[in-house]
Each structure stands twice: as C-alpha cells, then as structure tokens.
Amino acid sequence: MDGQLSFTRCEIMTILSTQQIETFWRDGAVVVPGAVSEGQLDKLKADMAGWVEESRSHGHAYGQTLDGRPRFDLEPGHSRKVPALRRVASPTEVSPAYHDVAFNAKLADMVADLIGPAIRFHHAKVNSKLPGSATVVKWHQDFPFDPHSNDDVITALLFVDDVTPDNGPLMISPGSHKGPLYTLWHDGKFTGAVSEDLAARFERDAVACHGPAGSACLMHSRVAHASSHNRSDGPRTLFIVTYAAADAQPIGPIAVPSVHAGAMVRGEDTRHIRSIAFDMPLPEIPKGASFFVQQAGGE
Image 1 (spheres, rainbow, N blue to C red):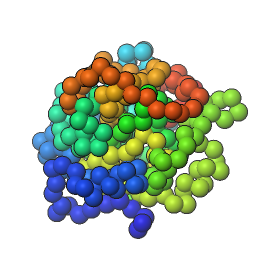
Image 2 (tube, helix red, strand yellow):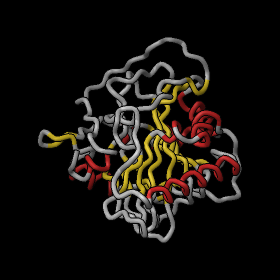
Image 3 (cartoon, helix red, strand yellow):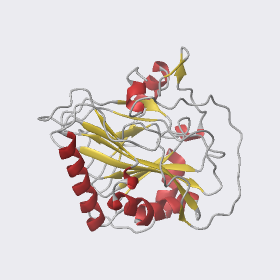
Image 4 (cartoon, rainbow, N blue to C red):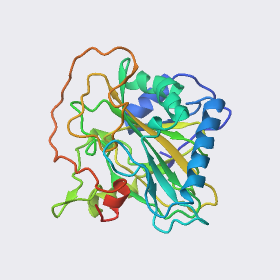
C-alpha cells in the first residue's frame, strides 16, 4: 500500500477491470474514474450550488423528508456569509439530475459488476464539506446503520468535486470488510462510531481515497472508514448512493428514507431472499437531520 487510492486523469474506462474487481474484494474499496458523463456532473454541480445558495437564507436545518426530519442539514457555525450545508437527504426526490445519476449513470453499472447483475436502490444523500468545514466523520461501518439479510451492499461515493488529500477525503481500513461487525453502541447510547481503541487501530493503516470529479469510490458496506475536516479553500462534495443485491433485503427502518427505496436499478427482481449469519445490535435512527448529530454526541 502506498497510502492512497488514486489515478491520473488520462485513464479512461467504462466498466470495471479484473484488477479493479480484485482490489475491491481485497481492500473493501476501489476508486474508479468516469462514473458519470461530463453533462451529468455539470448538472449535479449546478443543483448543489443552488442548494448552497438557498441555505444562506436559513439558520437551522430545513426542508422535510418522508419521516418528517429535515432534508437539508447545516453544520454549526453556518451563516449567510459562510454557508455550511453538510447534508442533503434523499436528493433523488427533489432533483432529476441526482435521480438520473443514481439510476442511469455508469456508476450503477460499476456496482452491478461487483454484486449484480440485479441490484436495488437503497438510499442516497449528499455529504458536503464546504471550505473551512469542521465536519469530521468518525470511524464506523455502514452495514450496522442499514443491515440487510446479506452483505452484498455497496456504498458508492461519487466525487462531485475533485477530492484531494487536503479537503477531507474518505479513509478506509483495507481488509476490514472481512472482519467482524463492530458495535456503534457505547455506554447504552448509539454513537454512530466505533470505540476509540478501534479507531486508533484503523487510523494506523488508513488509506485515503481521492481523485478528480466524476470518479467514484465503490465501498463495501462492512469496510471501516472515516474522514477528516476540509483544510482547503475548495468544496468536497460527495453524492452517496447505497445499492444492494436484489436478494439482500433490508432489516429494520432505513436511516435515510426515500420514495425510491427498493426500486430495481439493474436486472430483474427475482423475489428471492438470501441470508447470511451475523450478529449485531439494531441501530438507532437519528432524531435530528443526520448521523452527524449522533456522532457529535446529540440525537
């Protein structure tokens, strides 16, 4: 490992290579270019810019998702002058551009290469770290937030902006998807993060995932990951879509509800459920706008 997963802008590929597939199953994540077209990317950027501009007129989380929680989450310190929009929940419901990418872009074809041919949409969100953002994502696995009957579940993180070593890139612990599911509960409270001892261990062998806008990090739902704050003067925005194999059925409520949950993205519904053995406590759905509140010690 050289401490990063990256590539040059000159590489072009339309489907995953054997090497990329092997990297994913070995490390638990792989960064690939060309997950969307330039036109699709431009539309994502335009909608995000519009949401950031709109957020200037709000002092608290706003909008509404299916379960009544706010759609747009604002980081503490957000202001009209220095906006800090950090989460848009279920953007596929309010943006044709984000819906198009989730269902029609190469991004979904790449996921199908790994857990297909039949895959479902589970949920989507936008996580953004605007310039000067203090948002830090603590070490965790995604599967304990959204358990399924089996773990053929992928978090696809599309880079809406260039992701660099300085603007808070995703960091993974390579191979951790092959290990146990770690509890996110501590002292009777759902914290959304692993213990401090585990976090220190993951930090020691962390690999950063970065690359130009339009690339994607395809991440196994069991791989441990985190990210630091944005130290740059540019934004770091990710469109995050969780896809599951058609025979992986959700267990429990969806943390980010969507009218599109369960919709087939590739292939056909076989109406079949495949299960694997695992043991874990049920997660707790945040009462606030996002899991950022849980990780910060709130609800």
